[in-house]
Amino acid sequence: MASLPLRLVLLVSMATLIRSSSWLNFTGNSETIRELIQPLKLTCTFQISKNDSENDSQVLFMSIYHETKRVIASISKYQPVATSLYPSVTKVQGQIYHSNESKDSYLQVTWTHPKLSESGKYFCLAHAWNSTSQNSVFDADITVNVTKSSTNDLAVALSYLQDRLDKDGVDSIQISRASPTLPESCRDVISSEDRVVVTLASGLKVMCDTKTDGGGWIIFQRRI
Image 1: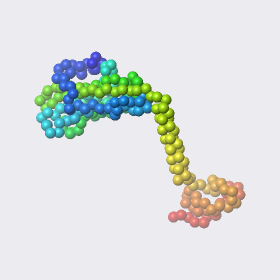
Image 2: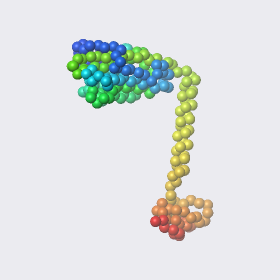
Image 3: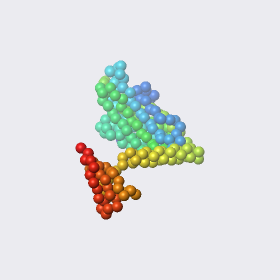
Image 4: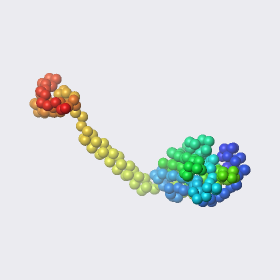
């Protein structure tokens, strides 16, 4: 773990390493991902012990890294905002809770359009200490396979995007038709008729003489 911060390396060297612990849960949205089409999401969760308060552990640091030693993201008790050290990651979320808050600390990374290079084994590392001041490092891993998208996959994705664009366009037209703009005066009224009765934006119902320069009008009703 040469790429991990020096402070974390020192902490790990003084702590007990516990692998495959039920307290640390590392999952992905799918083990096989289509390149550039399907998003890839990895979530590492440190689960608190709800029935054994004596063994509750306080998380100090969490990180996700690739088998090539690239640190993808990290979060610590002293730096609550999750940070990504890997440029292709689209989104990073995370939160470290105190052990008495009864909430699971977590770190999550998302690639919206993952590449083939995102394939491989990922590790989640959590450094924690319990009520007896015993330091422990929890380690979990998951393997992800990003496969090359076929021409058919890309065609399906493009068709889906086109359908979404068409639907958004129809929704925009419907919204425009549902909210017509009322004229400010007879100057704004366009009609093939010589005279037309309209309601102005002010609420006045008037008859507009469309053939008169400037638009003559007669008030019929004032809306209260």
